[in-house]
Figure 1 (cartoon, rainbow, N blue to C red):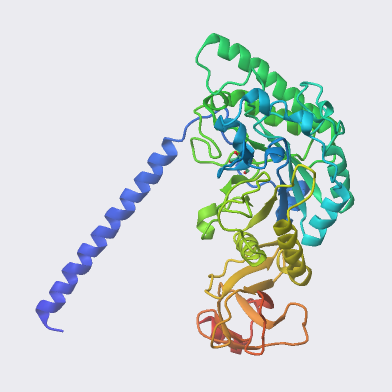
Figure 2 (figure 1 turned 90 degrees about the vertical axis):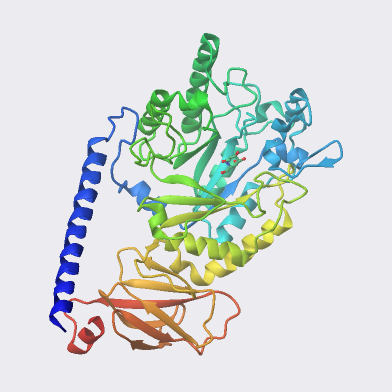
Length: 486
Ligand code: FHN
C-alpha cells in the first residue's frame, strides 16, 4: 500500500470510529429517554414476566384448540328474507336487515334437536384438540346458560336446557379443558353504551358493569372446572373508558377462581390502550391479537405467550349457509397450527354448528383429517415450543420443552432429498429419524457454522411429515464435534 493510501485508510477508519461512537451515544440516549418517559400506570400491565404456574404451563402445552360459535344467529344462517349476506353471520343483527325485535324473538325458535355434546367432544378428541373455547354470550346478548340476570337465555327457548353445562362435562370427560367466551358488548341489554357522553350514559353503564360482574360470577360458580375466560367486544369507547373497572374485574375473577387464564382482550389501561398498555407491556396472560392472521417470525410475538384463532372459511364464525371465500383444507390448517407452535403459540380452529346442533360436513372432514395427522405426529405439537433455529423453506421446526429434542415438520420436500438445518451452534445433532420409527436413522452430514444436512431422500410421503432430531449439548464435545462448531 502506498503512503497516501495508508493515510487515506487511517482517516477513513478514524471517521468510522467517530461515527460508531456517535451512533452508540444517540442509541443510549434514546434508551435513556425511553426509560425516563415510562408512564406510571395504575391500570396497565401488572405482571412483568410470563406466568409460570401449573395452569399456565398447561395452557402453553396445548398446541391445538377448538372454538365454537353457537347462538341465535345460527338459526338465520347468514340470510334474511331470501337474501344471503356475505358478512360474518353472527353479526347479522347489526346489519339492520331485520328489526331488532324480530331477531330478539329468535330465542322462541332455539331448539337444537340434534345437539349431542358427547359427539362434539368425541370429534374434538379425535381431532387432537386439548382445549375448547365456547361462546356463552356473543354480541347479540343471548345466553346459552340459564342466567339469573336476564330473560334472554336458553331457559326462555323451547329447548329450555343449559347448553354450557353438558358441553363442559362432555369435554372434561374427554380430557379437554374448557374456556368460556363472553362478549362484553351486548346489543340486547338496554344499559349497554358504545360511548359515555352524558350522565345518563354513565349511570346506565354502571348498571351494565354490575350486570357483567354478576354474570361472570355466575359462570365461575356454575362451571368451576373452567380454566379461563375469552373476552370479546371490548373495543368501544365506553369499555375503554372503564379501565379501572375492568382491571378490578380481572383481579376479582382471579381471586374467586385462582389460576384462571385471561388474555389481553379484556381490558384497556387508563389511557384507553388495549392488549398492550401505554408502556407497550402486555396486559393479560397471553396475547389475543392474532385473529385470522399469523405471525411470520418469532420477533413478531416479542417472546409473549400468544394464541391464533382461525376461521375455516375466509371469515365468519357462526353458521352461514353461504360460507365466505376460500375454505381451508386440513393441510392448510395443519400448516397454520405447526407454524403457530413453531413460533411459541397455540392454534385454535373455529367451528360454527347449525342451529340444530350438527356440524357442517366440511368441518367434520377437516376435523377428521387433522385428527388423523395428529395421531401420527402429535409428539411434535404438544408441549412444544419455539426451537430457536433458523426457519428453512422446507417447513417448520418445533422443540419439546425442557428436552434436547427437535421436530422438523416438512411441507415442501426438497428436490435434492436433503434437509438443510441451521442450528443455534450449541446443539449437535446426534440422530435423526422419522417420528414413528426411531430405528430408521437418517444420514446426518455436519457442515461448518452449525449447519447440517439430513438425507431424507428415502421418504415418499404425500402429506406433511415429521423428522425427529435428538441433539446433544456442545459442552464436553469431541474433537470431531468441535470442528463443526468453528
Ligand atoms: O366480532 C367478533 C367475531 O364475531 C368473533 O367472535 C371473533 C372471534 O375472535 N371475535 C370478534 C371480532 O374480533
